[in-house]
Length: 304
Image 1: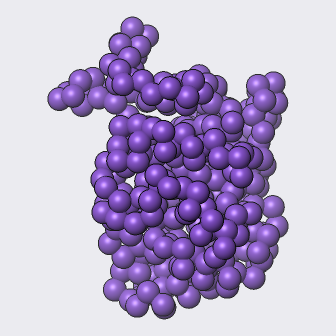
Image 2: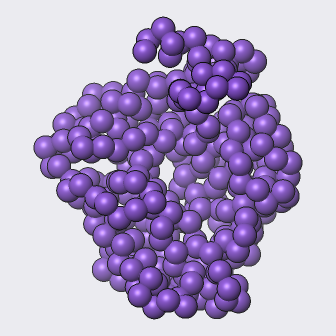
């Protein structure tokens, strides 16, 4: 099982990310190379990267299964403001260069939002931008994330994902990141994942799936809300998510948790704690822990 979660990326770059992932019991992880809402970026520290790779090697973490996530501010779908559109293309290119510096093979990307232009034009804007970015790139694969369909975001159905992939020239540098919460909210039944996977394989090809964001959903299927829930605490449910994680056809695909942090209590959110250590343990045991929220609060209150 290749299971991990979202971790932070600070001044010590990849080194801190690896240590955090190991603390959670993960054997892979996902990170942003800086805050996802802005352009502020620290230089990549080669020494820190070298140390991180050594620790990964010692602990059985395959760097080829580690995932970077592109920042939210990138929108390749809308070109009404030519400067903003050009900035998105440039900034994605820069993020890919940062991945190359660290030896990271995959970067997850939200396809973008049309925001006032026809979806057909927006899809073609994404195609143009992807081809532009991938022109001089050979080592990093962009993974298009399946989206929930909130607002005007693209990639909320397999037809749009297929269109983007079909029109990207460098097929070896494009792939897909499935998100279980997004798929549920977009209208795909994650309690019948085998049927969905067959549909995906027929339309696009299962080999394009390079990452899965494993998240429960706070809303029922087809809600278009995009509100993640902790594993087993949402509408998809623990057993359905476990079947996705354990699916033999996707055994070599890294699974990444992006679930909500837990507040001090049900009412007090002044302090929040990461759930990943407990969710990963629960998944490994293949047994739902109905007392997980309290276990998390107790653990972090004792260790803080």
